[in-house]
Length: 196
Image (cartoon, rainbow, N blue to C red):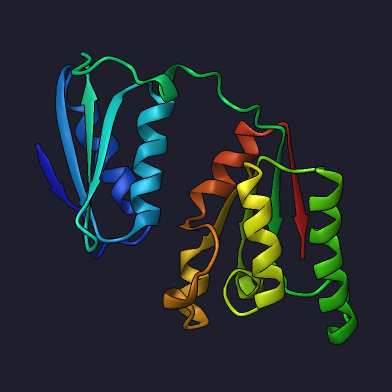
């Protein structure tokens, strides 16, 4: 079964996939989406349900194949490796710490530099609202965030927020994400911390 979910905003592609999977006991559901955030969410759906999956992209669209009921291929070494503990989800909804803008930008940079230096790292950082300016426009913080990402932290920026600020083409670190990361994070992570 092939589902064309291009042009559908989150979480619609996941809902369409869940509905299709609920109607079969065994088989393949392939979902076509036009953004990486939706592809990531479909991958998370498959992992959450222990379904085999494949993700392919031609640079414009993503095809996510989800297999229910049987395994088509042996597990990869990455799939067999123990998963990193989901200890902390950090949600950043502002580009400053505090009300004073100039000082707040300095403090935000210092916050991430301290996080990097002391290696006190969350599992995932999700940027939303004005926070997406940190992963796009603020070159100094982008550099620090790239280092933090290289240390194993997953970084996402809200796709709707990027679009609102006209920054979709300027994402420089991490991946485009959706509110599913927050909704699922409340259940999946030991702790969720908001900065905003």
